[in-house]
Image 1 (cartoon, one colour):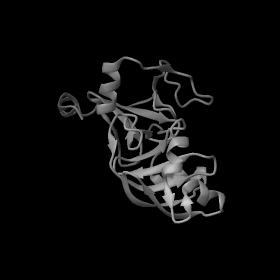
Image 2 (tube, rainbow, N blue to C red; image 1 turned 60 degrees about the vertical axis):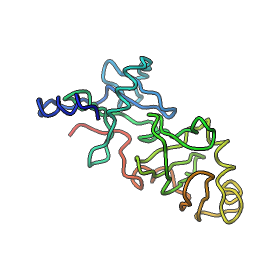
Image 3 (cartoon, rainbow, N blue to C red; image 1 turned 45 degrees about the vertical axis):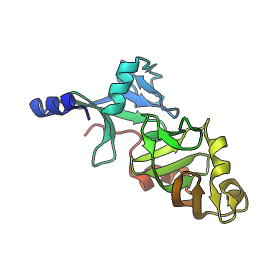
Image 4 (tube, rainbow, N blue to C red; image 1 turned 180 degrees about the vertical axis):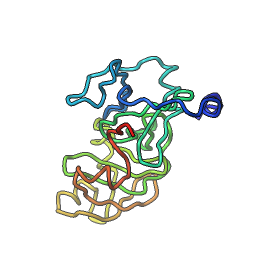
Length: 195
């Protein structure tokens, strides 16, 4: 986190947290919800945040609490994020092979690959849990090699778990997981509620 943010937290430790004003969509886009309706059903659509300086500030000050709720620390105030998919949206890096988060951090290792029953790929990384961005999944899947060929072949043959080799990342286990179990297994909350 930014030094100025850390100092503000020390100076004003009791600023109430905010819920419902910020969301992260499945493509890694931050959205502002001016009426606090990010958690409404149906969710308020929100306004995409496009200012490069503000996006960089949010990305640098993005973290999780001990309960698995993800937030942006805005000076002394914690702004909890409503997540559409996962805390991180993982993309192919500029080299087209490696991986990086939507915040621009390089992913040096995936500790677990988790294809779900809806065609998404979740991952456990040292940075935190994420989901591979849907646009990058078709290019990534053929590169993930298992003992039964690539991961797509293994899934088509009915395999439910095994080991994956990626061209630039250490070998890691994989297992198929029901979508409804993903957040509990990876330890994050999609919709942090006020406590």
